[in-house]
Image (cartoon, rainbow, N blue to C red; front, side, top):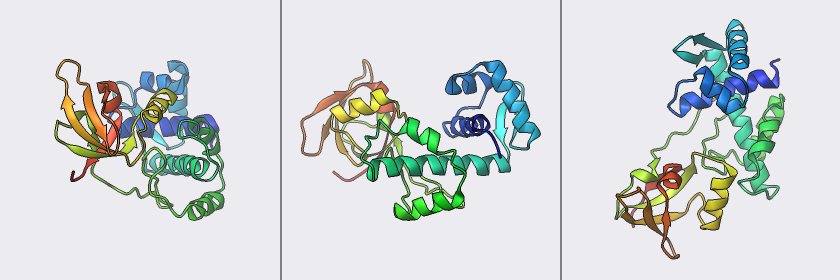
Length: 220
């Protein structure tokens, strides 16, 4: 059985690669809030155990064994977030840290029963896909909101950055997963955009906020 720290490192490598970045020591240290020297030592240990490969200047890459474990951790994390929001009434900005603790529960039977209890959800409260018990993830075509143009009508399907501040800002603007937005204007000066929710008044979103929203096109 791996330690929590070992599992955290494996999941961090997975997340960085999924975000389109290479899992370099510095990036891992920043994500895990630890020292680069500690990350280097851990990567060597995990490489010896067969969970990843690590080459200087090329970053860390998960082996098939490491990928399978990372998907299990992601599955548990997102199922717990779904449970906390849908069954216990937590806000979507309150669940990440709790799920970070619960994802290390080892019982596969518990997680499979939790999945069944929730009705086998495909996506968590932030719109992130939940791997099934075999590690399969449902694919869908999305894009960042900040590449949309005036005249587009889109539906928010995921939030790629789940910091408390961003989620609370979205709450304040009445934006959730499933919210529909009509793009009225995109400002060349700073990339901000004027958007109008369905049945709501128009307002402006900064490029930084729209960069973190994943959307899909819909017919107006």
